[in-house]
Structure formats: structure tokens, C-alpha cells
Length: 436
Image (tube, rainbow, N blue to C red; front, side, top):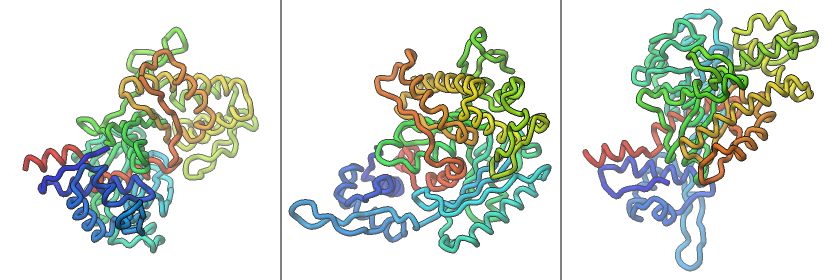
């Protein structure tokens, strides 16, 4: 848990500490409890609390009688004190959410990414969608919108606010995405890597110490790892932390698939939805008569319908629909589909054990576009494999679970990056202020 300081120069840090404590205590905290938890003096806590109340971020929510003495006033987060907009830019869809200060979604919209559209046309569509979403949400005053967060496939250049050669988004290299959207909307905009944004969503919604140390395993067209240590989302030197696709999880002689890096059994290629769907199609698990029909891709698009449609698996919507159909085959008891998903679960578990050992986290959250259709099918097996692995050397148990945010996790995380940038205590800010 963060501890504060009584230095006048770092009042902003102290304010973030107190707000973070209040936010993570749904029942609220008294000023006495805040002073004890933060290490700040009672007078400092009172001053900070008054500023938070005046700013509309915290409210007084009744009295608490605790033995003899004066009843204590309980402070709670005013979730309606501010709002953030999150945008998940994906090759197949663009998801928009508006969240309150608690990270709860108050409005959402999903649309297909315009096919063969220029970045300017996509930006036009994003601006229009955000304006319409706000117009349809009268409970969200525009002057209470704190900013917009964008989550995009990496690698990104966070300092310049651009995506660098994004997969499946041709023409987006070095486009001034962040600055252009900020100019159009007139609010601050932050750009984040998708897996980092997903970790931020879990961090912002965590209570107690659940948000102190954990990893977020992101399963999309590729894989990634979001990392939270000491209640801080890690980004790395270039904000591209979490590229774990070349973690070897299976030996070449034990079914390891050759990877373009020259190795075999890399996590990215072993768990690739495209590879799994192609293998399922070759084995006749999906794509035959009655197969892969009616499955819905992200955003509710029509699914593939028959073997011929599987020829276009490079199309993200077609791939997603086929992957959902493969998951359906598992639930229907098809032994070939179950074997594919059993191997997938084992490979994921092998990777999670290595991540838990490396980072010393006690919780790993799994999520992402392709985790949603399969998480309920694999989670039990993954948990057992991690728990019983002889390679797990941490002196504590490791909990494995699925993200509670569901399909919106990355867009929610993008919005939470705005909240995190404004209101989360950061040791780096403390050091800078103390040295000022």
C-alpha cells in the first residue's frame, strides 16, 4: 500500500494517495483511518480531504459511531465526479466506452473498423462516434470528461503518440493518432498498448490488496502480458512491455510448432487462434456441413458459414467466428476439439508458471478478445496445471482467474489510463517533487 509524505511540495502526490485509498474502500473511510493507512498527519489528511470534496471527487457519506467519542465522518468516492472515454482500436472493430471514476461503464458502443479506409477516415468515424455517444449520455456532462484513452496494438511510440507498424492496420505507421484526436475533441488524449490498458482496467477496479501485484495474460490475435507491481502498471523503457510471444512453452519433439524466430514451441505460435482454427479445419472439426455456421464475430457481425468461408481466415471477423465455432465443438464434446483446447490450456499454463516465478505475483488475470469464448472451458485446467506444476517455485499460491470486465476490458482500460494518469500515486512524481 502507498504511504504518503508530509512535505508541502508534494501535495499532489498526497492527494493521489488519499483518493486511491478512498477509491479502494467501497464502504468508505474516515479521516482517522486515512491518516493511519497513509502515514500522513491528521491535519494533512483533513486538508487533502477538503480539496477532494471541493473538486467533486469525494463526498461525505454519513457518520460512523466507533465506541466513545465524536462520530467519524465517512468519505467515499463520488463516482460521478468525473468521466473518461476509452477507445479500443482493433483491426476488426473499434470499441468505445464512457466510465465514471470507479471505472464502471456508463455508456458503450462498438462498430466495425472501416474496411480499406484511410487513417483520416477512421479518425473522422472515431470523432463522430464519441460525439454521438456523449450526446446520447445526458448523465455525462461534457465539462466533466477528463480525457480520452486509446488502446492500440503495439508497438507504440508513447512519447510521440503514434503506432509503429501495427499488425493488420496498414497505413497507420507514424500517424499522429493521439495529437490529432486531442485537437479534434479538445480534451487530453493518452495512447497505450492494448495489453497495458487491459492491466490498467483490472488495477482500477481492484479493492484491498488485490491490485498490488498481478499479471494480465492477454489473449488476442497474439499474446501479451500486462504487469502490475506495487500497485503500478509497468510500461518499460518504450511503453511496450509484455511481448511474451517468444516464450518457449513446448519442445520441438513434443509438438512444438516452428516459429519465424527460428525456435519451436513459442507461446505466440502455439496459442495462435489462426493456427488452431486452421488445424481444426484440416481435421474436419469445423468448416464442414453445418460447421461454423451462425457464429458471431466481435461486435455482432455475421459468422462464417461453411468450409468455403474458412479460406479467408486472415480476415479478423472470419477468424473470430471460426474460433467461437471451435469452442462450441468443445462444449458439444467433440474429442478432437477437446484435444486442441487441452493442449492450448497446457501451453498457457506453462507460460503462466514462468511469469509467476519471474514476477513473484500471487494473481494472474486472463482476458482479451479470444479469451472470452474459451476462458470458461480452459480456466479449470489451467488453474490445476499451474497449481501442481513442479516448476512453480513461488512461496505462495497463485490465483488464476478471468477478467471481470469481459469484452470491454481493453476499452475500459484505455479509459482507466486517463484516470490513472490523473489520480494514481506514482513514486516517480514523489521523487521529482521532493527534489524540487
